[in-house]
Each structure stands twice: as C-alpha cells, then as structure tokens.
Image (cartoon, rainbow, N blue to C red; front, side):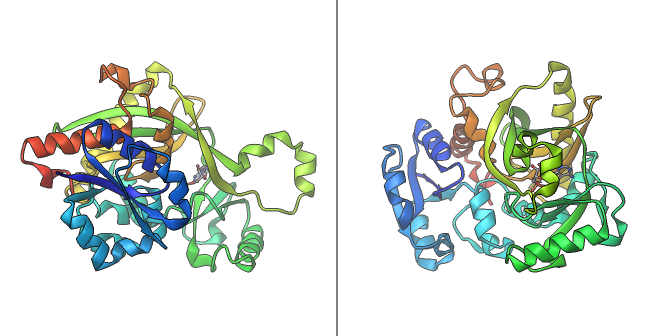
Length: 341
Ligand code: AMP
C-alpha cells in the first residue's frame, strides 16, 4: 500500500487530505513543536516527529519511508530548508521532477527556462551600475519575499544592501538578483501537467498578500518617506482571483510552452503542479517574473475546488487531490516511474 507523505508546513493539510480522499495512507514528517497542530486532523494517519526537517536526509528516515513505499510531495518548505543537491540525494521517490527544483532555486537557471518557454520576462541586471529606473532586488531560492527591496539607483541599492546585511538577512551582493520592476497587477497562475494523460490543466489564480508592500496603500506617500524601514515582500497569505475569460487562451498557451521547454531542458519535464507568477499590464499582457516547479501555497485557497476545477471535474478537486489521483492512475497503469523521480 503506497503512503503519501510530506513535510508539516506550507500546504501539508491540503496534500494529505487529498491523498486520503483518493484512498492513500498518509504520513507527515512533523517538527515536534507543531505536533499539537497536526494531531488535530484525522486524515493524517502517521506523524514522524523530527527536531528539524533536515532529518529527512538521514538514512534511517529514508529507510522508514521506503518500508512504507512512500512518495514525498515536495512543496516550498522542502525548497527553503534544503539545498538542491540535498533534495536530489533523497532516496524516497519524489512526486514530479526533483531535478527541476534546482532550476527553481537558481535565478539564472530560472530565467533561462522562462526565456526558453517564450515567456515575457523582465530584464535582469548584471550589476547595480545597470540600474536605470525602478528595479527589484530579490534573494535566491524560495525566500518568500523576505529581504527583497525596490531601488532606483546604485547608491540606494548599496544603502539597502548594507542595511539588510547588518540585520543578518543577507550576506551581501551574491545573495541578491536584480531585475527590472514589472508594472501591472499581480496574478499567480496555477497549473497541473499530467504526464499520464499528456494534458495541461489550469487550476486557478491567486494573489499574494505581502507584508509590508501590500499595506503601503494605507499610508500616505508623504508619511512613507518619513519611515526608515525597508518595506519587505514577505508572503503572509493569498487571496483568490478569477481572470477575464478572454485571457484564458493565452494562459493555456503560456503553460503549454513552459511544459514543452521543461521537457527540452530538464527531462522528464514539468510533471505535476507548477505556477507561473507575474503581472498583467493594462493591455492584458502577462510578464512572468518567477515560476514554482511544484505545488504553491496559493492552491490552499481551493481545497473544495477552484472557480476552474468544475469545468474539468464533477467533484471537489483540490491540487492536493489531483496529485494523489495522478499517482493512483500511474499505479493502476503500472507507470509510477513516469510521475516520480
Ligand atoms: P518572487 O520571489 O520572485 O516570487 O517575488 C516575490 C514578490 O516580489 C512577488 O510576489 C512580487 O510582489 C514581487 N516581484 C518579484 N519580481 C518582480 C518584478 N520583476 N516586478 C515586480 N514585482 C516583482
């Protein structure tokens, strides 16, 4: 009997509830400090308590998961807590393509894949001297927006970089990636690519609610200038969004191009859930500044189904459940190796 497992954070509840709904055993690798929270949910069959998530790299835990024929569902916490080589060394099968997670973590590789997919990507700046207009400095990996800042000149960049270094949030220039600021309204497009059906499903859209930047509208511009604090882009939660129906054709097209590009650059490709993240301008044109090559926390909005899932499923279908269904179909067809790495 296959067990679906994940780390206790990010979208673990959605993933394990979906797995249970599809008839799987469920297992949560849970930090001791969060045991009380996760014991509340009866659809979690087993909790493996750890002091830190890095214990998933230990032989013992891998063996335990192996006995259960476990499949790990990767999410943002796995990426933020472990380096790509560490993730690649995990012996337990990982749903989707674990090799593409390295492309998500490295800003240069990320940019290459987005360009290969023919997406409209903001220009990256090789050095602070290239800043000409509004730019954003971002950290590598799944930092969740912490330590990001906006800047318009080299001098201002250096001041903010030094302040964040003093606070211990970054180590210096090497931790930062500079990109032109893309103007518009944000939208995070959630997809699922089924390797079993060779089909792309568009699941939903969310917006991130980021502190401090999304709170600035409540402070008059004049007072904003008086505040010394560098506003951060730290994700606090997500809110739902539906798109104008006329935008959907291009949404599918962007997702398909991304899937094709991933097949070429990172075999076996972009299997499973992923997200294209960016902004729409006033002409409804999308600029992609980021992708996530695994389930995103914005799908937590749609545990009972999204505004789009009823067009594909006659039952409540979350992204977590969709993952479990893919694994179930793969097992039934003897094709599990097509959906895990
Ligand atoms: P990221 O880690 O790339 O998802 O960025 C975190 C947040 O920073 C996003 O949710 C946006 O609010 C903002 N952001 C990142 N890149 C850009 C960009 N090039 N232009 C405008 N906003 C951006």
